Structure formats: C-alpha cells, structure tokens
Length: 380
Ligand SMILES: *Cc1c(COP(=O)(O)O)cnc(C)c1O
Image (cartoon, rainbow, N blue to C red):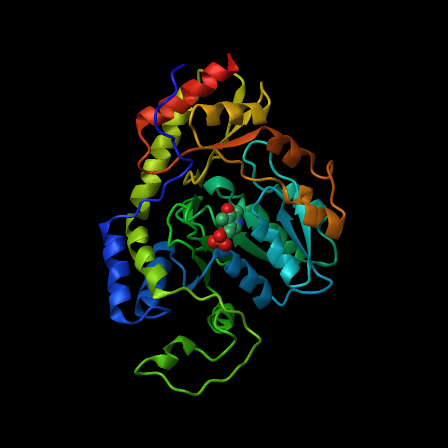
C-alpha cells in the first residue's frame, strides 16, 4: 500500500476567525483574567447543558479536585474510580488525602462496571467517580441507585462527554457533580479549561469561593469599577479560575459544538461501516439509549500485537494514541497503594489491545478510508 505524503495527526483543534477575533478583543480590552466573558460563557454553558450552575475553571482536573473538597472527602476515606482513565481522575483523590480504589470496566463499552463498583464498596467509601469513556455515558441510573443505597456521592468525570446524552438527557444536567474538560484535544477547547456543573447551591457557592483562594464571593471583581478592596478568606481555597482569554474561545466553541459533534459522529459511522469487512479487530460497542459524542474512536486489535499495529500506523504516517495506560499499573499507584498486574483482568485485557484512531472535524472521508485500508492490509 502506498504511504500518504503528509502526516495525519491524531487530533487537530477547530479554531475559526470568531475565536481569534474574540481573543484579540480581550487582549485589547485591558481585562485579561476572569471577567464578563467568563460569566457569559458560564451562562451559555449552563443553558446548553440544562443545569442551574456552571462554574468555569482552568481544567477538568480542578473541577474534580473541588468536587472532592466540597464533599469534605479526606484522610481515611476511599473513592472508587476506573483505572482505564487519565491520571487526574485518581490524582485528585490522593491530593485530598483519600485512597483511590479502582473498579474494573465493561468489556465492550470500556466504561466502569457497576457490578465491580459494588464489590469494592467498604465502610470507608465516600464517592464514586465515573468516567464517560470516549464520550459514551456510563449507565447512570445504575450508579445513581448504588449511590443512593450506600449513601455515597456520585461524581462524573465528563472530560469526554460534553453534549453526550444518557436516555435523552444531557450529561451534567441530572443533579450529580460533573466536570468537563476544554483541554486542547477535547471536543471543544479553550486551550486549557474546565467547567463544573451542579444543581446544588451549597456546592456551587463552595466552588465559587474556593476556585479563587477561598475568598468571598465575586472576588474576581475586586479590581473592577464595582469592586471593593475588602475581602475575607473563608477557606484555604485553591486558584483555578478561568480567564476571559479562555472564555473568548469557549463562547464560540460552544456555539459550534453541535456541529463538531455531528461531524465526529459522521466520521465514526464511516469508520464503523468500513471496518465491517475487516476481521481481527473489535469496535467500541454503543449501548441503547446513549448519545455517544465520539470524542474517541477506540478499537481493540485482536489478531496482532497492539504495539506492532501502532508501529505500522506510524510508519504509514497516521497519528494514534492509547486511552489509557491503566492507573493501577503506573509507578506511583503501585508504590503508594500496592496495586499490581492481575488486579483488574478486564481493564488489563482491553488495554493490551487498545488503540485510539484519529477523529476530529476537518478529517476527510479519504483519511478514514486510508486508516481502515492500512489496518486491513496489516491484518492480512
Ligand atoms: C482530559 C481528561 C481529564 C483532564 O482534563 P483537564 O482539563 O486537562 O484537567 C480528566 N479525565 C479524563 C478522562 C480526561 O480524558
């Protein structure tokens, strides 16, 4: 098979003239940090999701961290998370002095398995952090039942799931704490950024203060016309607010989001259709009732070593990634908590075969065909 001339990147953000002009407008305005555009972005995001409070932050990680803080989770407590996730899902638990306990995943959706979670619950369990892997929601009603029965909190790491729907309802709209990511590679971006959503006014109030050093509400206004020099430190807060420069991107990315998602789904369907004729790989299974926004297009390579397939794809100028190297196999988690190979058989089996293929608006139908052809040829 002929190799293409240019490299097909794993991802490319879609930034248009609107975003660029809005950022320039902020730079010229003299107001660079959190301000009117950040508030506008929050309001628009809350409306899009259908939730009372949307609180902007500098990352999804910060949202997860503040969620754990707001729930008062700390030393002696346990929080259940998947292992097939990014570092931040469990790191934030460690930051608050609690212990992350890893549950196994479902073999076909790669989402955290409610049955495995139940087995990991102890008297010390205070919360579950679910991850909507790749943009497909977890079985939220199963997790809500578990949370209710065991009186523990449910937090959603919604880094992949902006615009995803569970049984017709938007992720982030249904009363749990959900944290979204606007990191450069995500379905919409502010370069770096995140948003925590909740319907709980107590938690919203806690987050508003604690994202800005734990000082009184609207502290960001203190250098504006309507601001005051007085402030009171109510908590030992952290510093993780968003800026108007980031919100400039966010306001326009959000307007375009449904279009981005539509294009991702179209490209994913194209992959799926063309992979039908290819033996030796398994595709990401979509459950009924889920709107999967296709942040990732993962495949499992069944008939060849995964690393060999990645080498071939790289040689053929195709960017790939692996989401994720399980946390229980990472040095820190092995050392600090004694986790080891063999602890999570399904996570390990999925990981050993897993590759994420390129998928983003701007990718051409021919690019998809090229990727499929390279994989098909490699397997034959
Ligand atoms: C990207 C990602 C995060 C972290 O998002 P940031 O905005 O970079 O903090 C957390 N969890 C998952 C599953 C992710 O993919």
